[in-house]
Length: 201
Image (cartoon, rainbow, N blue to C red; front, side):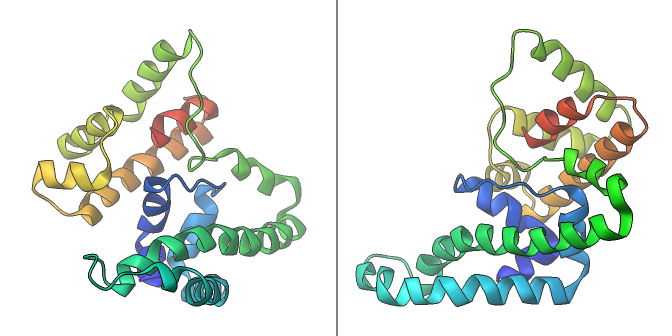
């Protein structure tokens, strides 16, 4: 399940739903989605720490008559350990990329789209609206609908139910919007902080 969620990118959304936040620039998320060996390494590291915790402490709390099977009881624990496993992989990856690319790699570190959404200042609503207008200028009707629902605070699962589609479909639409936002930021058409707030929210 962890490898599947990493492959399609939904692992980040599942962490966010449980208020598990961590820095994950686009370049690293795309690397994780593209490379099976990266997913394998992170999953093994995650489970090597999550399973002992589960067996020693959490399994004692599981009630077989409580309506949750072992898998659903274990996955929230695994997600918390995934954050730390991802960070350990990212530290090595960033050091290697810095050795290869130097300061140019640090620019990608600005795309911290998976962190907690900052509290907006008094001037930010207008900036955010303009940023979203630019990002969504060429978006499809479906992409616009998903983004508008996200701004109301709805989760991806709730949006999928409302639109009569799947969670993966919602994530794919958001992924296209994020990619467009990154391209606009790289070309200087929008400000990076605004991209981070807009896409995250």
